[in-house]
Image (cartoon, rainbow over all chains, first blue to last red):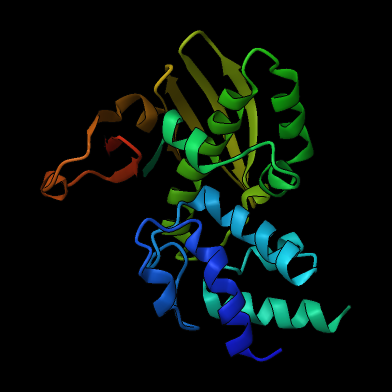
Length: 84
Length: 154
């Protein structure tokens, strides 16, 4: 899976947790979930759970720790998908 | 240094489903999950009480270490004592301990964390609706959620 495919599948997930619905369309690898998208930190765990379901992977705590940006999420999704 | 965190309980009920599979496991230690399950009169209150403890301690810790991480299970709540509308406790993370003081009612839960107990006793908290220009008052820690703005001064 390349990053563009992953971003396309991440957008609808992220859209569930942002107040400004225009923001997810502009996400890039640099986008920070909390700083840029203003996602509530308690909802970051929902994104992690949604990503697990969408990509059929398991995100351990060590990986979750780093999942603060879209780029980090992409790297984790690629890594965990490759391990399947 | 102090840190604070507020949860608007009405907003939290709209935004988060804490009963969702995997939700508690990713945020809380086994001991904390036990506290939530055993607080049968209001498990939701316990969820957000523990969460504000972790968030307020994280704010101090990340500003000292300059490191950001989403590792809620590494912030361990302990020594929790709950009274009718308040609670005290500790949050341990990687060898450091923070003390916390919480106030709660049916609308919100607010926790202040500090490195030292005397800082917690001296801390002044202002909880209000969100307004512009609060930065000019130079609070040491700011938390905004739902209907509420909480400013903490040392």
